[in-house]
Length: 105
Image 1 (cartoon, rainbow, N blue to C red):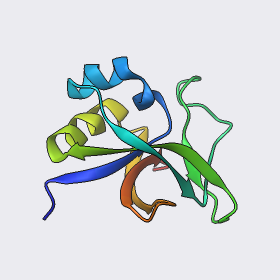
Image 2 (image 1 turned 45 degrees about the vertical axis):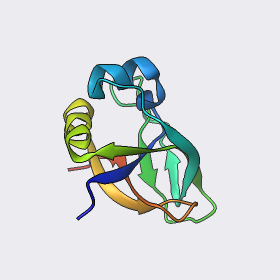
Image 3 (image 1 turned 90 degrees about the vertical axis):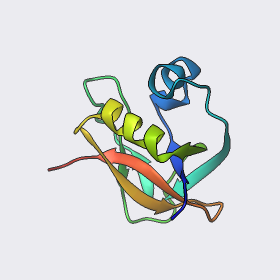
Image 4 (image 1 turned 180 degrees about the horizontal axis):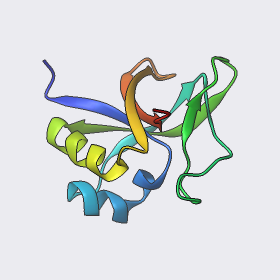
């Protein structure tokens, strides 16, 4: 089993201050995108973006792919709360990554 995972971020985790607050370091990543998803016009708590699957390959979200440890992924899960759920995706680059999407139940 790998010791690190890729996490695709499109929201507040792109901010260095948020990264340092959650994982206690500045994350290093590469620009990438996920196909078949879009940002919902509905915002979580009125301000945070949320990805939703569309099923249309023409839809895409651009963001950053970060390499994180399992412990860091756990900390990020706590930060994202039950409003989001983490699901696996294939990025345009071909990397397998996690993304946080709307938790509808």
